[in-house]
Length: 101
Image (tube, rainbow, N blue to C red; front, top):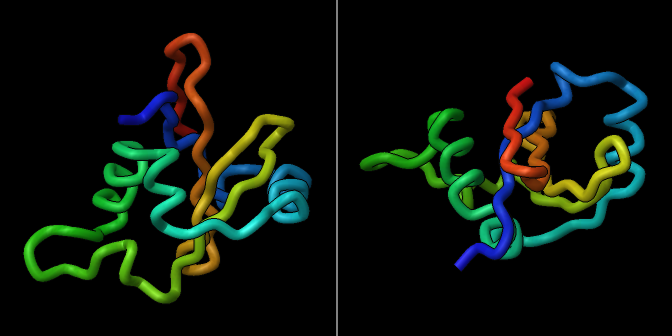
């Protein structure tokens, strides 16, 4: 179903100002459905890490405080969501390499 693998790369707290500013300047809005179609399991996993899902818990797609976007992070295509004013940034896997930072 998902053509490319994506991973959670970092958030704005663990990045640098110029990279985040460039990401935000390049950003376009997308829907949750589009973000999920692109990210798939990576989005589901990050949502769970942030406390979404589970029986009776709020779902990420239903949280009206969260917005979804595309842009460029350090020159690479990125998908991110803004959660509590913190950008959660995902990048495509390169040669199977995965980082968390």
